[in-house]
Amino acid sequence: MSIRTIGIIGGGQLGRMLAMAAARLNFTTIILEPQADCPAAQVANAQIVAAYDDPAALAELAARCDVVTYEFENVPVVAAEALQRSVPVHPPARALDIAQDRVTEKRFLNGCGIETASFHAVDSQDDLEQALADFGGRGVLKTRRLGYDGKGQRVFRGSADSAAGAYAALGGVPLILESFVAFEREVSVIAARAADGNIVSYDPAENVHRDGILHTSTLPARITVSTAAAARESAARLLAAMDYVGVLGMEFFVMADGSLIANEIAPRVHNSGHWTEAACVVSQFEQHIRAVTALPLGDTRRHSNCVMTNLIGDDIGEVPAWLARPDVLVHLYGKTESRQGRKMGHVTALTGPKMAS
Ligand code: AMP
Image (cartoon, rainbow, N blue to C red; front, side, top):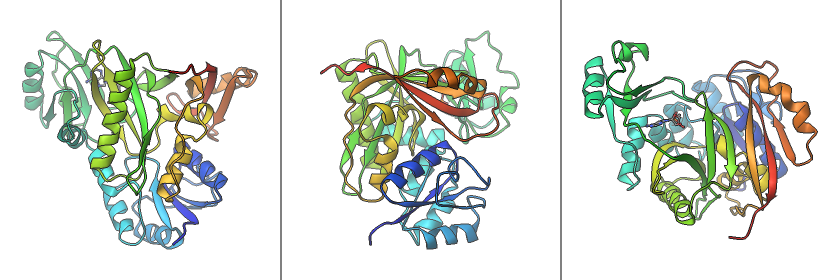
């Protein structure tokens, strides 16, 4: 059956950019999102205004679409599983299940032979104190589920740092304590897998976070050819192990010796891949649309060096200055209200042609 209509669960900026890429290839898109006039719906063909797990809305989405995808990893797994019974869903519900829980995710990565920080599951204040003792008082405490952009995290820097009350302070929910990774830099890889098993990936980006939120992605990353190859190879191994279809983002810590420790995966297009729309012929958004609609995957080669900068909260006021620069691609998300920490748009500055490697 040929695919004409793509359902997208989630109405944020990632859904918006997926809908724009889909439109260029003559697909129509329907967004499922409870917030009316969301960023994605502004550029899509239709919106179903309902909760992500509303059974009637999911049935309507399945009936009106030839394939369904999603733009955020906290789509209820039961919703994706229910949809999967009547319409193809890419990436598979299993990828959501793995990515929604940091402990499950790390165990899965380790099972694929991919190194992560050491960790302990923490379900009580006692667990936390034992886990911290094991890591010499240092570590990063995170919620196992629903954390993003550094929310729901606490860093312990040594035994002088009191853990009293820390379990309750993060909400009394299941937590994970990760060993503290003294990394040199952070990189991420955007990779895609097609239903026929073909896998492609983009050059790793070097990422800088501010207040737990991605600030810039810079290409090329300051890593060796072999570190870059290892990052791409890990992403490829992960995609194959999940029988994945679509684009995935994978974040790594780079150690001083060039070795990699995987931090996090996102079963979707990723903020650290936004640069691809300016510096590659086929962006991560088009790549995802190609993968989920069974079109051939596109070329991932990068033609330019670049720096992507997120516009967060009041940064939106800098848009006139960015627009005045001839080397910058400006991308805004259609959000009328700017709030502290809210992603309002991003800009990618081309910084010169990529040198032949
Ligand atoms: P995350 O939400 O897991 O992506 O973490 C947000 C940021 O916190 C990461 O990009 C790192 O800069 C930092 N971070 C997270 N986990 C660790 C860790 N185990 N050791 C050191 N820094 C970390």
